[in-house]
Image 1: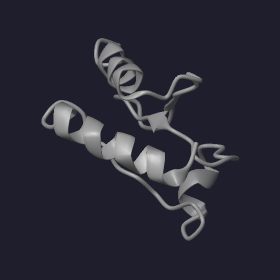
Image 2: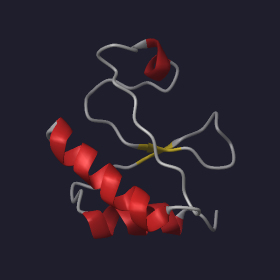
Image 3: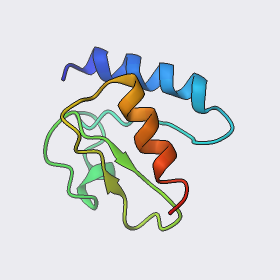
Length: 79
């Protein structure tokens, strides 16, 4: 996945999930320390930080479409 595709996905999902899920991005090429404690080893990496911020959930779906990403976020609201 290219950075531009992830950026677009993030922007689209943020518009739909506004007020429900907060989305953000970190440029790991300039802020490597931010991902080190979460074992970020490749880019792009998508993680969901739920109630327990110390245990993020990896988004591992090979299908990184808008619908799948929103479904992933919404399915973890219940957990």
